[in-house]
Image 1 (cartoon, rainbow, N blue to C red):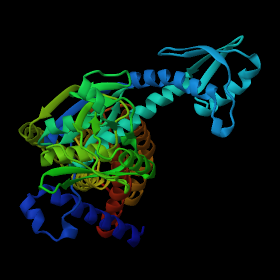
Image 2 (cartoon, one colour):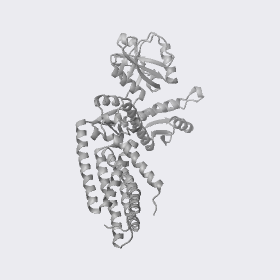
Image 3 (cartoon, rainbow, N blue to C red):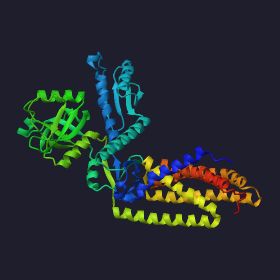
Image 4 (cartoon, rainbow, N blue to C red):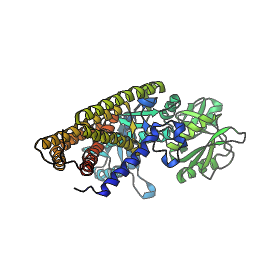
Length: 515
């Protein structure tokens, strides 16, 4: 019997690299910083229940966006039926155009125009609407599939924007996940200012630019096409939309006060240049989420697509505003429906108790294996410890978060790994009773236990993957460490333990295994 040198040194290298990655996590910050950078290892991310921080559950008002989209169908239909003169499209005569929160109806006066009307509407709505005809009356509405896709897109877009805003604050290892059909769960381990985070991620950040209605401001008579916002009368028509912003940064004005710069794309730059060149000497209002940030006077035409917003900001307010503008406006309003702050002391207590329970359980298992199987128990303990090191290595490399349920997953995996070793050793015991050689006992032990080990681990892994896919929060934390532990235990139990036993049988000249 020969033990491959390649196999031996490969396993030894894996074990040493894993130790180098994991050990710095169990050192103090001061000790770890004294190590060479290459030996400082990958930090294991701790979850909210271990590190403390903020938990925020947001609810997205998706239905209002869907309702708004349905209401917009009426305007689309009107525009398409009137035709585009520049494209040479003639007007299609129509009547009784009405819209509701669910559908739009219109009567096409000439039945021969129905086909052209359908073509225009389908093209304008990218074939996302359905049309039902009742003689020459047309009913237009979004299909169920389109509405479901719209809802999914809105929620996914909201999650991405929330993620960009949270990342800009420098929070480490944030967890931002979809929960149900319209909720977003945000976990921020180590967050020291959850109120600021909540305020930042909850704002829609929809910015628009409007001309100030100076005449209405002087006379006090507000026309239909204007409205009063924060005591200022502004035109309802959006002169420039914040959707065309590409970047926003914090700057300082001539007096050293914090300001926010804005940079537009080519479409926004042209619109902003047109607005400022045609209205020199007039005021325009910068409106964010229904509030006027400022209403400066246009001194000169701004043609470079670059502007600056001042409004008596503090540095923190300017930072938050630039972050929101840079990350983009939320497609719908987000409401905080639940929030919790977990203190670092509670996290430390969880770590202490969880660590004590894990170490005690591990120690009892190690002692039991040695008392039951002697030298084979020592070999079992070696691979069991390697298995735990590999689990933590996997957490560090993948960036997965270790939670309190995750520690429970590791504890469960310890029991499963020992159970596999017991199956192998009992198979070896049967061989020794028949008087076979040590080499034959080892081969029989592994071959007889292999199917049982694989069956139990594969079924458990399948359950862990289902929990990870459909679970959330603590369930996912449990599933992550459990699934990692299954994969690493298969490697340590089948590959590493067998190699150790083969080396022992060869170098020790063991003829027979007595159990």
